[in-house]
Image 1 (tube, rainbow, N blue to C red):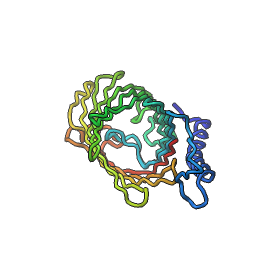
Image 2 (tube, one colour):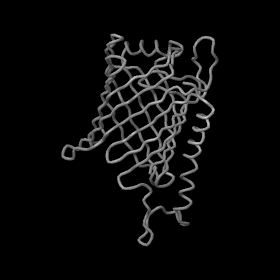
Image 3 (tube, rainbow, N blue to C red):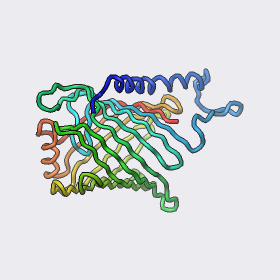
Image 4 (cartoon, helix red, strand yellow):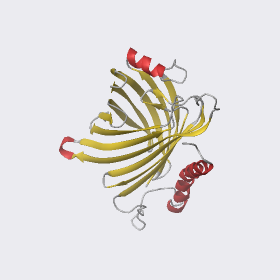
Length: 280
């Protein structure tokens, strides 16, 4: 997959739209006294049809790290994503654009590349008596090769279970169904603190276990600690600066993460970025 000029223009327009639309919408909907609350004589107008939701999101990150694996180095990575949902069902398109991919095959220079495109279909619901929120889903990964290897694709089925309790404990199980037998299981905790008006300080982390039959690997894999400050700018648009730290959980995972890093010697990564989010 090569990044064409048309794709670059499209992504640029997407990013500009993410930034411009909320402010344009805010100008037309927020009264002069700067309150965004509805009044009895002027109720808030619904943007989307009943039951239909839409989200546009773009993240600018210093590095792409996925399940502890280093998938970019020394370059800005941009993750545009769009989601449309209806009554529990959602379809998401996610893109990884590396502005200076510096691990090309021998004989090629580093370049801006569309490295990965993911398509995700999910269904979400809640079992009320148990306060149990569950999400079932399917992911299709299409990548251009991160370590000089050839383009590849893969599919996963997954399930996430979350309890409505303090720290929002969540378990996720992901199973590869195309390239081989592999299971990735994660346990997540997170919490939000109100810090100023409707701003929130969000903190969390996860630990994981990986079983990969093809690699004869079975061990605790990667951990991740993160924090972000969510700043709503109006009812639809928010900005979140975020920082994350990824690290191995065992000596086996340390060896695996180093072997798959760009220079063969890294297993811990400190990275961060800023997220622009628009939800209707």
